[in-house]
Image (cartoon, rainbow, N blue to C red):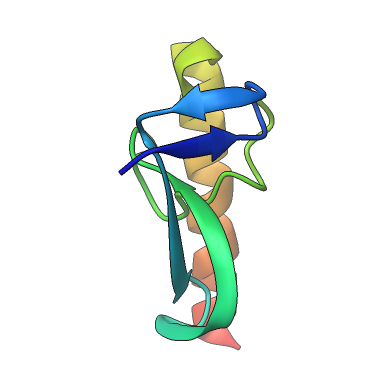
Length: 77
């Protein structure tokens, strides 16, 4: 599986490509990179501030809570 990850600028075995849109919860024509290590609501590589492996527990928790709030707001709309 693996792909070249823009966060670490090299090949990562946890990085994968898919055309799944997590916000719409369906497939579309745009291909996105996803990180296999990310837990929570959004595993896309693009919104990550840095590589998930390099993030501290606090940074991971903060990111997950932020994405949870973002998705709950989308659901309410």
